[in-house]
Image 1 (cartoon, rainbow, N blue to C red):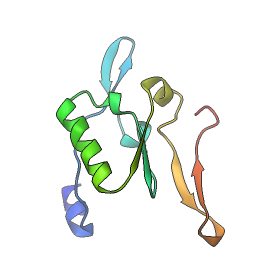
Image 2 (cartoon, rainbow, N blue to C red; image 1 turned 90 degrees about the vertical axis):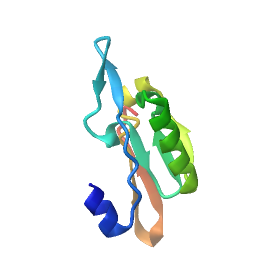
Image 3 (cartoon, one colour; image 1 turned 90 degrees about the horizontal axis):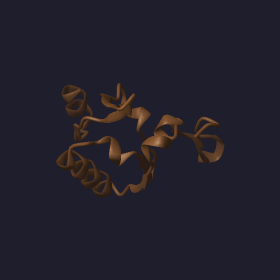
Length: 102
């Protein structure tokens, strides 16, 4: 991951995301479960980032990148709202693809 970031001149922003499963906090296996990065925005479940310093660091980097931060709840994550994808169609038109449950 670090090598990839160095090769493509990205700044790595490392954090741990969790969700409540049967009353216990469990690690989220992949960030696309709880966040989506679009061209000008981020849809993110900040409450999944339990560590305040990590959460603040994520917000800081999103703001520095000029992203509008759209927060979602853990309940919305459970309905796949974090698992969206922005795609570009004909004439460079942008679309946000998501589950009907989201």
